[in-house]
Length: 259
Image (tube, rainbow, N blue to C red):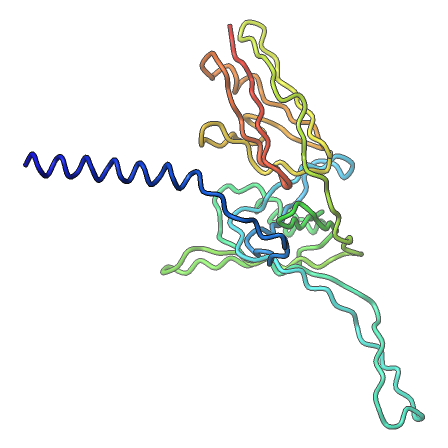
C-alpha cells in the first residue's frame, strides 16, 4: 500500500512536470490566414425600435439562414446568332430560407411571427464570423411550424427581399469606453458605456458564466450600452467583471460596486 502511494505521488509529479514543460513550448504560427468560413458563425438578426437607431435581436435556435440571390433571365436570342441562344440577366432579387429550432419566448422569433401575421416588413441583418454584415428589408411570405411528436419542434420562415440587400459591410474591431466605472447603491443610477463603431452588435453580456438579460439587466442601441441600476443593486460589493461579446471582438468592462 505504501509503495502504491509513493508510485502514485511520483506519477503525479511527472504529470505536473510535463504540463509545465508543455506550457513553455513555442510552436510556429501559420503565416497564411486563409481559412474557410464556418457556417455556424453566420447569424440572422432582426431589428426592433426605429430605422435610424435599430436594436438588433438575434433569432434564437438557428440552424440555417441561406441568402439566395438571383436574376431573372432575359432572352436575347436572334436569327443572326448562328443558332445559339443568348441570355441576359434581368431584375435581381434575394430571399432567405430560414430554418431553426422553435425556442419558447424567443424575441427574434416573436418579431418574425408578428411581422408575418401583420403583413409588415422586417429589417434584417446577416452577420458573418468577422463581424461584417449585409442588411435589407423583406416580407415574410411563409412561416411554418413543425411539431412532430417524436422530434424537436422546428420553424421554417421564408423572407422575400423588398429592394436590394446591401453589399458586405466591414466593421472595425469594437472598443468600449470607459473600461472601468463605479456604482453606488446609495445613489444608484444606470452605468453608461459607448461602443465604437456604433453599428456593432452586442450579442451577449456575461457575468461569471451567467448571461445578463437584454432589456432587463442592460440595454443596447446604436453604440449606447447601459447596465441597469436594478441589476447592479443586486450584485455584492466589489468588482463586477462583465464580458461583452460583440460581433467583432470580446471586451471586458469592470464596475466597482459600493454602498
